[in-house]
Each structure stands twice: as structure tokens, then as C-alpha cells.
Image (cartoon, rainbow over the protein chains, first blue to last red):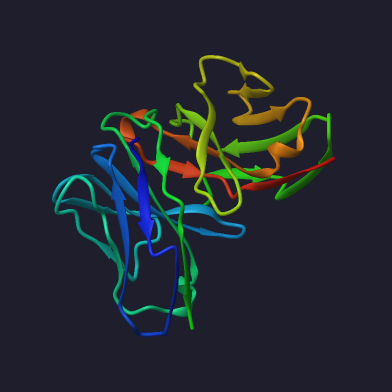
Length: 114
Length: 113
């Protein structure tokens, strides 16, 4: 069965370190998204991609970067982790087309920045 | 700028009761309104969705009511069950925006047995 996976599921790091969160989907979806989930804020879009070599900034992109070298993967990098980036991160994917395409979410990565 | 406002933040309902979650939006260009359900430790999953050309959509015990003039929509869960305990997110999007969805802040629903 097609799926979307994230790794690691839990990560503790220190302020200033570079961290990369992995996202891998086997749906063969063109669209991929990264969100962060914080209490009281719901899901906020960090970066998104509509295909290989395409990346776009979302609502809360400062301090984050992504790259899309193939259809299956969209890694999220925190260049210099800050305590404000402690959060739960979700990756999602959807087929190409309009916004009515269902987004399929991964299980999430809980990141703690000390 | 919060484009989709959701309330309440948390809700406790007795088993068998009706759970109601409300959302309001600002951007009149939104033309697709999905609801996502999230269980603890899991990612959100699409529950039900509606377009503004209809005022109501029902799927089993879940119903979306939509009021275009008031720019409001709500999720009703009939005969609420303990298995419905989860966090619910309303959302809105513009079809032409190619999959970008704006989420509400979420409602944590607890169903008491």
C-alpha cells in the first residue's frame, strides 16, 4: 500500500545545530508539504513543492529550507535550530491538480530544541 | 492573519450527544472547505468536505452545515461515540491555488462514556 513516512519520529537537539527531517511518500504525488503544529495555532505551512526542483515558501518559512531532487522525498532542514522551532512537524502529499485533492499526512516528527 | 477561525478550542460531550464545532472565514475566494480528524500520535486525515454551492453535506454521523452569507461553517457529529475523541481541524482553500489549504486552530473533542 502507498504511504507517507517521516523520520525520525522524535528528535532532541541543541540550539544552533543543523537538523534535517525526512519525508518519503510512495503515492507518486507531485505535491508535497511541510507543516508545523503548535497548540492554539493549528497547522501552519512551512514550505511546499509542486514537483521536482520546485520549492515555495509558506506562512512560516524563516529558518527552514527544503529541496526536491526526486518525486518521493522532501527533506526539511533547520539551518540553525532555535527553541522557537520546538514543535511537531508533519509532512503531507497530494496528487497534482486543485486544492480539492486530498492531502495525505505522515505520522509526524516531534522536535525538541534545547 | 488568521484566515480561518475555529471554536471552541476544546469540547467535552456525553456519549450519544451532538458535538458541534464552528468555523468562520474571511476570504470570500475560498471555494473548498475540508475537515480533518487527528488522533493522538497520528497525522490528520480528511474526514469530510464541502463546496459553497451546497448548504449541507452528510456522511454517516458527520454533517457539515455551510452558511455562505455569514461566511461560517460547522461540523456536527451526531450520536457522538468515545471513538470520535480526537482533534478536529476545519480548513479552507481556493481551488486554483493548487492544493494550498489554510487550517483552523483545531478543537480537541472528548466524548465521555
